[in-house]
Image (cartoon, rainbow, N blue to C red; front, side):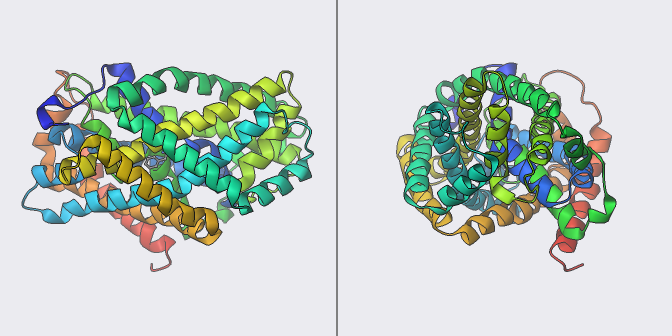
Length: 438
Ligand code: PHE
């Protein structure tokens, strides 16, 4: 794809659906509940929401504007916007590295969702008891053949969509399926909220207990915010480069962040009441969703249909996110290394799949990829992105890009203060404190 014939999203809803498609995924429905569970509930949620608002939205906005201004992949974007500051190209390199590492474990979890879709279709989930569900998850996720096969299938699906290009591939699917997912989660939330014993789950999720807050809990909340919004590694910058000048970037950043946060909180509402109602341990870790939700389906009228629809849509949500991750690598391979787009897609898909095998075979490698990307690479990328827009690109150019749609730029003063000072300092402090240095 040459620069002047760059592919682009077709309209406002297409842009928001594609960016929200990247943001909304396993991060909201699988990772968010398990990280909330491991980090004490309500207080974590509060810190998380604060990070989304004060840091997440400004960083997302920065990425969108970097991408759209440069009209390039992340690496090329920094190179062309600030040729005198080669240090920022590190964001591009870290981004491609992070995409590899995230996809490596993401595709494993997506593989689990494929297995659960398969089980749901065969009606094999609804007659397992709560303890059988837990044992099943443990045995399945620790086995090799099934998870490897499903992970490979998932990566092939991702590659197949990316090879189709942005408009035909990415946009077409996200536009239709995201709204359906939303409806299903709302229904699940209502069902879970009306279970007997749901109150304890609500208290866990919404009643903050600040004694649970430690440096690492705060870092986990920051990492989850970055991971869930898909920021800090160039996905949003890459999508930004496909957004037309007539779109309002601030509005896009705010809508996408709000949609993403809403879905995460709804997933929490669907899961925690059920966790307590069925006596599941909230700190169960990565298996939490898989062990909990089938219990809810069991108690629903139309549980079979809901279980199939839910896991199927979870696969789709995962796909629209994995597609955005693969797109970062493909855009880099094709625009910086000069590979043909189709060839770049094949090389990226195969190498990431091989890389991901490590995450199937070793749960410590899985955890290492999960922890390191969310809590280290993405926040560090966030610091550099904020500094770049705040100090290097500067207010004038930022303003020019943000008002390119022909409207007024609101809140530019606040946004610049956040980007120049608050975001880099806050992320830096949380990071150093979280890893125990400060
Ligand atoms: N935000 C995605 C999710 O929540 C995951 C993701 C992270 C995608 C980073 C792209 C970049 O599932």
